[in-house]
Length: 120
Image (cartoon, rainbow, N blue to C red):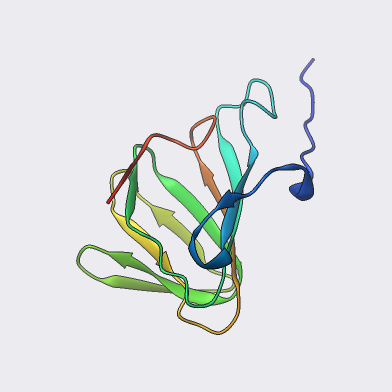
């Protein structure tokens, strides 16, 4: 029989990001045995601009609050609360919060943990 895993947000340590922003990898193979996908939670503080990354897998995200943009190599893609994002594998992107409130984003990968990622 399969087990249901419950992972409390406050039980997972922060992955520190610039400007007081952070991510937490909530559902991973370490916390949910047998999973083939992962789920995370991020808070991007106003004024945050991350360095570009490209993942080996596609990424899905839901913007729970705030607004900002994804900085791509050739353009910017704006997002706001209520938007869902799909970022294909290998696409260079950086989250930018140029608003005046936190951006809260829930994200996931078809990978049992944070996938292999290149950084610029």
